[in-house]
Image (cartoon, rainbow, N blue to C red):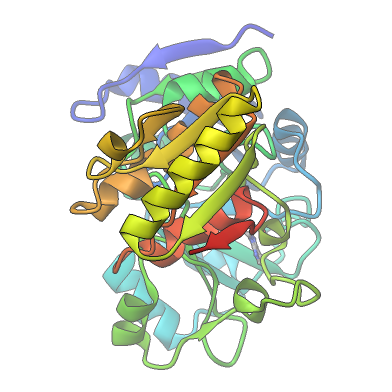
Length: 349
Ligand code: AMP
Ligand code: MG
């Protein structure tokens, strides 16, 4: 298949291009597009065939449900059997934005879209291209991250092209995304709202709005027999080709340890990658050293995480040693992704 790639300026989106992309989705095709979190792979959420095509293009396991993207609050109600008052309050504060909510689904949503579940995940993204496209597509766009299943989520159109060129009808290139980590998922089918995936909207922000909030046991249990409730969280996503290890502890000890590990592996003939920050990269004399961003600006760490992991795949690093980024606001979201990429291999110093 020939994939059409169109560049659209998010500051001044060309409506003729967006209308064309909307027509592709209405007719059952697939379009990758930017959101404020990561690039999404969009298809008509109410069309069973379009859902099948999304799973096929990504190579995604069919029990891993899709998030339905909407452009206005009114579109939520037909999708679900009820909207608890707390969820409506949260929607009014955080939508459009990097937040996904889970509800009991109505008959309108096909089981193909929800991976066979009786619940549905819904999000209203905050990105001019995404919102205009959803409106032009009929209002309900199923959009998982636009990567091959098992690769880091795409934060640039180039990443989407790497993974999906030739497999989908269109890619809308709107430049780099703002946040770089997938949305926070909050489950409202439980008695107490439960975080199934941490993201930019963190636990404290949710508590301030909702009161009591729980963290899914499958996310925090050290015991891997407790399964996460979001089916996607159980897969070892975002796995780089090389063995990734996180070194955790006091900063000076961390740099010492990474320097030592790198020296040993390089002496044994391996290509070694190091993930540091703007503040620390100068401390590493050996290896392929990349900065993930600045500790003084934690948003930059979230934004660059996935592209740095992709870059290490390209240079075929056999070992990658990373600092730990347990930053105050986004640390939980960043470390959730990094720990999964590392298969939870952590060296404590
Ligand atoms: P992605 O589309 O790549 O951002 O991944 C979507 C995430 O949402 C996956 O981890 C899914 O398992 C999760 N998800 C989607 N729908 C549901 C649902 N109904 N219940 C629980 N988790 C869901
Ligand atoms: Mg994904």
